[in-house]
Every structure is written in C-alpha cells, then in structure tokens.
Length: 304
Ligand SMILES: Nc1ncnc2c1ncn2[C@@H]1O[C@H](COP(=O)(O)OP(=O)(O)OP(=O)(O)O)[C@@H](O)[C@H]1O
Ligand SMILES: [Mg+2]
Image (cartoon, rainbow, N blue to C red; front, side, top):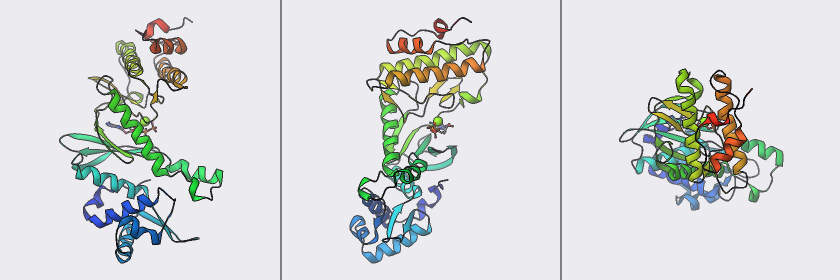
C-alpha cells in the first residue's frame, strides 16, 4: 500500500522537491539513478544532496540500493509528493481529504479546492512491474520500462478521454493533470454494483448507460473497462468513470472492446434483474452503437 503523503507536504522544503525531481529525471535513463549523477540532475551540491537524500529516505519518498553501485529511485510516495506539490502550486488542490477508493491500480482521495474534488493517483505498473522484471530477467538498464512511465501514460490517457468526452458524455469533469495524477470533479453517488434499483428504473438506467456509451463512441472512444464498478448512480442520473483504458474507435480492437463492454453491462443487469432484463444480443447491440442506431435495449433481448 502506498502511504498518503498529503500530511508531509508542509514539512518538505523546496530543495527536497529539487532532489525528488532530479531523481525523477535520472529515472528516464535508468531504473536506479547513480548517486554521483544526482547533483547534476537536481542542481544541488553533493553536500546538499546527501542531506536531502537522508530526509527523503526517512520519509520513505525514495529508496536506495547498494548492489553493483549506489543508486536511488523514487517510490510512489515521492512521485505522489511531486504531483501533489504541483497541484498545490497551481491551486487546483488546496486541502486534502479522506480516501474515496483505494485499489490495486489507483488511489483516489477527496481533495478540496473551490469545491470538493477527487484526486486519482494512477498505480499501473506498480504490481506488474516486478512480475515483468522477473519474467524477462531484465539486466540492461537501456530496456527498462519504468512504472513511472506506465502510470503517467495511464493518467494521460484517462485525462485525454475525460477532456474529449466532457460534457457531452456523463463523465467526471476534468480539472487538472500532472504526472500520474488527475484531479476531477467529485461524483456523489453510489457505484452501480452497490445499488438495488426499483423495478421501473432498471431498463431506463441500463438504456441510459448504453446511450452514454453510444455518445462516447460518436466522440471517438470506447471505454474498454466497463463494469458495474465503473458507473455511479445518483438521483441526477449516471456517471461513467475510470477511463485509463479508453480506446479510440479507429483502433483495430475497438469493435471487440465495445462488444465486451456491452456484454459486461448487459450481463450484469440480466443476472441481477432476471425478471426485468432478458439475455441480450450483445453483438447486435454493439454493432448498432457503432452505427449510431441504438435506441433501447428492449430491441436486443433474446426470447427464451
Ligand atoms: N470522480 C470521483 N468521485 C468520487 N469517487 C471516485 C471518483 N473517481 C473514483 N472514485 C472512487 O474511487 C474508486 C476507484 O476509482 P477508479 O474506478 O477510477 O479506479 P480503479 O478501480 O482503481 O481502476 P480499475 O477499475 O482499473 O481497477 C471508485 O470505485 C470510486 O469509489
Ligand atoms: Mg474502477
């Protein structure tokens, strides 16, 4: 689990951030940044580097290895601190709140600005990275694919999708983006997986979700990770979130992903509300979404 760095931000000094961003720079070239290169990357004197390294090690923002050579890398906490510091400087985040969702692939916190917002730190590459390293037996630094890069790309992709889709599709409003983190509107609602809908709401809610997916498709995106865990339901309607896998509709697998998304959603409704939603022809429904011909799920329910 990655520790929440918000509480330590106030005690970090500007030169601590120089050190962290120096190590970040160095990690573009190698997984572990050699000690003697850090002064150059961070523009600090070697004495200051020694002092700052101790401070950042004590706070678990960086880690050290001593085999082969003395090297340092950011921990996710250090990367979080850099992103949060940037948001604070830009005033997109002015206060830090409680966790909204803590998972394998992300940590989401409530943050405060002119109104409550949600901050999502991406963690992609964190769990997979060591597995990948083991499997491929990486030895050369030149080939390394850093978790920093993987997590940053995921955040960029998610933010790009939110920017493209908001407000035509019901997604959280994007506010700011830095490194592996995004700030967005905080959605009040309950995840679809945790709701039990009234009978008369079931088909309308399913239709609403599929219509939002159809609009997203029109705007050039397939969500590609649709499930009951990535939809919020409230009295205002539904919101589809969690877009890092968003795939352009001209991607070679877009049709396959769209059909899988449709199947996931339709199957969830069918299993939870079997009296109200029959088995759905997901292939036909997905094809009609792609052709702009979708109206209601009722047309795709298979007789049994
Ligand atoms: N904008 C938001 N407003 C309020 N809560 C949010 C918001 N975004 C995410 N959350 C909460 O955080 C949780 C995790 O967010 P999200 O689904 O985006 O990432 P994830 O589940 O880690 O990604 P994946 O589904 O790939 O594992 C959500 O289930 C939700 O409870
Ligand atoms: Mg999710």
